[in-house]
Image (cartoon, rainbow, N blue to C red):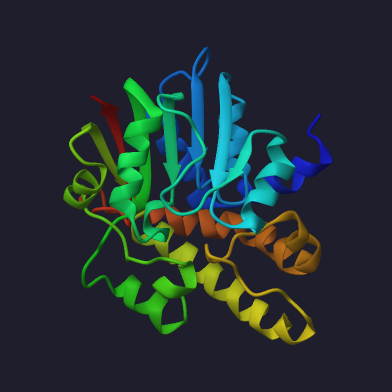
Length: 267
């Protein structure tokens, strides 16, 4: 039976096309974590951290803001840390495997963070990094900015990465072994519509004391579920239609996705 503190997160996950696609790509690249020391960083509201821990092995989790760290801790319990940009509290060669989820684009010194990852990952260890994929001239990116979903709203200090810029950020201590892009036009259209609607509702509630967003855009925590209960019920009803729109990705197999995920090895 699912514990009450995780039920809300799993219910929302099952209604998020993008989060499901993200986890699928991570699992596609993940080494079996059983018997290994693993770390995930940037796991949103904690549902990715929770689902990764279900795969076995020893896990620690970390993120930037107190709000997201508290949400992750609510879902997974112990071994959750708040980070300060590129610095971590972990000893040298602490981990066999590290999963970075939407974190690099939020910190100024991303190359310093690459050196930090090289320090805490054991030689031969696996690194998985998920980032926004730069799409110059994308009409969807222009639409997102016009409705207020800017890089600043997301807490991004840069719009995203290409494969070359990820390689430069990680530095010579890593060899990139595999690359995937995902979330094409259909999925990004759904994500844009949902985030735009959520931001509109949030702004309308702001006068009633609704907290402003933190450093990572629209991270939905357990507290938000009660505050926006009606909106989440509408989302549940709309999910089959949203899933159908996202399925349009299959009609554009040649189009690069708006998300980039890589697997690298610590040399």
